[in-house]
Length: 640
Ligand code: ADP
Ligand code: MG
Ligand code: ZN
Image (cartoon, rainbow, N blue to C red; front, side, top):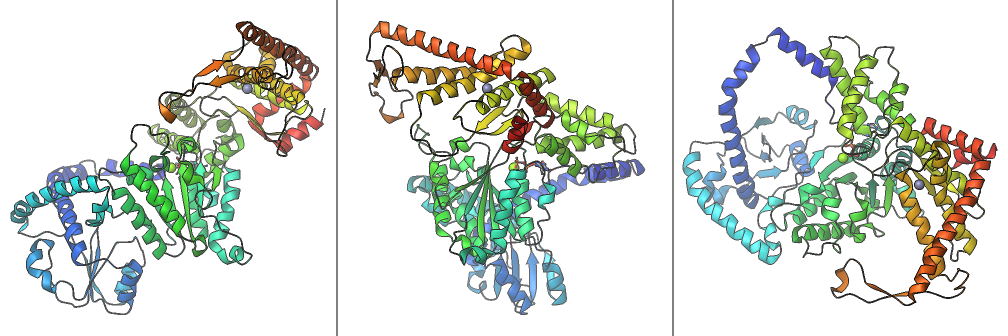
């Protein structure tokens, strides 16, 4: 959606060459007056929205259309802020500026609706022979009235602002400043499909189900199932969350309301809340639709963590959102999607059942996914047959979908600049280099040695887990960089565990040490990459001794530290602890931790050395595919 079409970029370039000075000159001449007109129109429409709103409440767009269809509306004025229908042909010279004098006769036969981008409207009006025109409201009184109105209004605003601050936002209802800015895309207008999204197969799978909910809610409700109301898409920026939400609307053929969390949070207290209310009201009129809240964290930040009083405005908006989420029934065909890249800061209330209780991970694409994304985005680009998208995908580890879309675009522009007819591999390479330079500030893009090291490191964790009895099975291994982590190995318990034995704990330490040992095996030295693993391993060893009574000297004795409470109330970061054992015991604990970790290290080293060929195969497989799931990993291990 956001990408500049390289094709059209090329076209305009050619046009400008044909008539190089005609268009720019004309534009310059008109620029200033146009600017003034824009400012005037803007000013007028603000006035309109304030005063006309009070006089003529809006009707739903569907009703507006029905009244056109029934022939009740004879004339229509289309403006940016409202569609106004009149039941008589006559010109009612109804200007907001002449408001006091026309108040008595303004109501009859005037219908106003909030505009909807509906391609069917014009043909409909044509077929009904309706007189329609686009309007920008201006008249000659304007300057005059500006001075007589602007001052009182300014004062009014100031007073309203102060009052609404005091009353906690109750004033917002008076003026509908809260009219939401969510772009309404009418049904059928969403052209995005799942086939436009690649590299996020797991997320797609989950969302296919959501599409099914929207298409056939009865199928689920008949059996007594509850349709989820909210689905939260979690993932780093640019991985296709917005795109996926659009694709869900497109696939289900329902309307799509999109609004960004930051748009809710405005200067005036209460505006955000009324915006949420409006948004849901409009959505409910649509029957089947999707509301998409981008950047949910902007409103959904946890209320607990905001120590310094918090933000009234955001809190009210959040509360309103919670109220609305509780207040609708998903069986009616409304589903709320939201996106965030900071799930950790979200208010827990948002994640409760009946709200955003479904969470879908939208992660950065792996090798195969990246090749597919490149393919999707170069569908409309003329590629030289020599271009090897697989090779490009290999060189872009850690790139998100948006970065890849950008690369295709950039490559096309570079080709145009070089005067080529087709985009060549070199164009892509140059585009990638440019992007890497920019990306390196935000995320890690791994160098080849780092990739190898990471593959061995993660492979080490996974191997140890596979050959340690009672260890949780490895469900995913990845060497796609993510934030500060260069890769990860995921283990998932197969059943709930209530007690963990001494052996299991030692096994966990082994798995954690496996990464570092594997690194050492290939480079012959240590790197800093495993420090987090070491911290965790040490923690487990410490707990074994102090909390679980698993040391030799203090077998079955808990060496507790007691919290002293804290002076600052609940908000304080770290409670203070006091040790309840002797200094010499502390020394024993430290030595014992080192002994446990070191002996586990030696043990695990032996294991991995014995399995080195398999580990090497695993590392190579990881370098090739970047992620391995449970099945692939098991198959590889089984070959041993
Ligand atoms: P997010 O909302 O996660 O930040 P967007 O959906 O806004 O990311 O992605 C921006 C653009 O990048 C999309 O419009 C699309 O062109 C491209 N893009 C991102 N992810 C993908 C993907 N998985 N498949 C195809 N294109 C993608
Ligand atoms: Mg987005
Ligand atoms: Zn590790």
